[in-house]
Each structure stands twice: as structure tokens, then as C-alpha cells.
Length: 446
Image 1 (cartoon, rainbow, N blue to C red):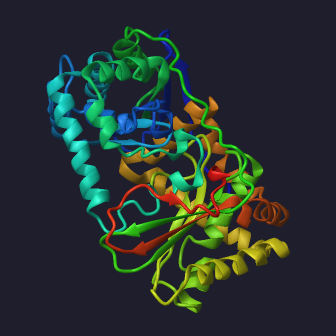
Image 2 (image 1 turned 90 degrees about the horizontal axis):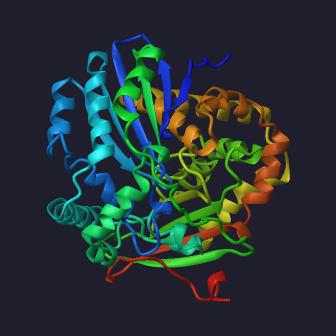
């Protein structure tokens, strides 16, 4: 069955803001998304947690919309809104009845132009972020596992390895001038993309974007450090003591091939084959057959997004909180035995077909969530990372091109011990914190 094609039009405003419009008149609703190219990975060294902090700051009011007014106006229009910070972007979106489109664009433009960055808001939101970290990580069983515990062990570049949720020392050291400079550096029209999806005619959408956003001044192109990682040549290991949980856990992360390469598409299907769903090969081996755990989880860019909304070094991760009688080496051995089957011979085409079906199901389900935010997310990331939002229309075909030979080649090249990181969580009374590489296996200590 041929995948449906989405009508997409785009235009660049004079200030560098890319505007992407995808008309769809099935229902009288529109989804608006504003994506800024600044995420965890891109925040400057010494400013850990700033990308996340600014996600909070953007809801604290602007020159013409005081604190809480943005939220009140969207809710009173019958809409919903939210924002999130990921590795390479921070996004803000609203889904509203289409007659509220002008209101949404005015609100987004006002905070892009004149966000209220003052001492009161900084102090308040810094405390909010720190409390969020305490609740979600420091005082939560397995709170940083594996999404926050794995990067310091797996990566060597600060951009990928630091505590991006918010290091308290960096947050406390931030001055008002630091935060204002961050806003002026990254929250620029020429460092953003505006998405309008749904019940809107392209000419109307472009006209409104021009009206509300075109006079916002552009700025210098933001400086970004190179996030590239040195090549990995041997397995890396790390350990974290778990303060609250009573069971051990393990996570295994493999470095991924370059984004949008044939091998990257193959890894998307290998993810479906190996850990997504009760029919997956590792679920059947580790849970059903060996009874190591009640479930497994993971994926590409697990816990923070998916395989489409990042640009840079990334891991495919499998994790499980397991029975105390199961030892890490047993779990690794069982995992390797499953992967070896994919390496030793081409997989059956039926398994690939099933994985393609699961991938299509995931894609179409995610595209319809939150009033169409899933579609906006895909198009925004393709616009920012690949300069072409219409690549959303080629996803289905790219996965269908993956052959048994490509699956085997990819598994052999990337799902090998020398390309992985093993993180072991052990119950204990130590304070949770950043994972420490095991001295005997860490390349960083050679």
C-alpha cells in the first residue's frame, strides 16, 4: 500500500525564519509549532541545563502577554499547548480551533521578540527546574536510568556527555546577563522554523507569518561546538549505585550509524525486530524464555524522542530492571546470542516486512497525536537538520528499501561489543549521580 503524501509548502522570511505549511481541511483545527535550534547538545559548556531552563522561561510572559496569559488565551480558545527540550531542538506548540490561528501566531511572535527575562522569572524558574530534577531524578527510583546515566559513560565529547537536565552548580551560577545573552543568541528567527498544519490555506498562513514575525530582527548565526565523537574501538562500562530501587538493572547502548544513511534505516527496523513489542526477539529471549525481567525497554534516542528528532551522535539502547539472580554477563551473553543470529545469516524477508509494518504503525500513530504535533515534529526536524520538511513523505519508502543484506551488514558493523556501552545499576545506599566509567574498560582513561 502506497503511503499517503502530505502537501507541504515553505517560504523563508526576510529575517531568516523558515515557514512550513501543511494544509489539511479534514477538521477545523490547526497545529502551530515553533522550533528553535538549541537543545541539550548545543548549549555552551558551563551552561548545562540552560536549554531546559529556557523551555520554562518561555512561559513566563512577554511584553504584551503577561505571565500565564499565553496559557490562558490558548485554553480559553479550546486549545492545548506544551513545549519540550531535546538533544538538538527546543519546541513550543499549540493545537487550537482554526479560528484561533491569528491569536497563536501573535503570542508566539511576541515571546520570540520580547520574552520577559528578569531576575524574578529567572529565580523562580531556576527553582522550578531544580525541583523537577529532584522529583524526577534524585528522589525517584531509577530516576536517571538509563537516559541520564548512560551518556557520561558512552560519550567523550562534553556536548553529548554532560548533565543536560540541569547541573545545579551551573544553574546557580547563572546571572541575569547570562540568561539574557542566551536568549539573544539562540532565540532568533534565523535559528527557528515555524510550522502551521491543518485547516489553513497556504497563502493565508504565509501572509499571517509575514504580518506577525517578519519584523523580528535576525541576529548573527549562533555558534555551535562540534558534537562529533572520536571513534569507539572497545566496549565501555560504567556502574551507578541505586539509592531507592531494590533490584539491579542493566542498559546496553550501541553507537548508531549516521542519520538518514541506509544503515540508519536498517537500525530503525532492527529496533522493531529486537525490542519493540512482545513479539520482539530480545523480549522473547530475555523475558519469555529466560525470565530475567518482566519487561525490556529502549530504542533509538530512547526516553527523549525517537530516531527522527535528533542530529548528531546517538545510541540505540536496550534496558531492563532485572531479577537479582540474573547476572549482567548472563544478560549480555543472551543478548549477544540473539544478535549473532542476525549477523550470521540474512534474516527472513517476512521478519523485515513485519518490522516495516510496526514502523509504519508507529509513524502514523505518532503523527496523529496531540492534534497533529507528531507531524509538525517530523517536518520541523527535517527542515532544521536536512533543509527539507518534505522528507516526511519519503520515510515509508526508505524503510521499504531495506533488504536482508543491509540488515545483516548493519548488525555486523554496529551491534558488536566494540561499539557498545554497558551500564550496570546496583542497589545500594550511595547518593545517585553521574555514572562513573569503570577504570579497566574506559577508553577515556587510556
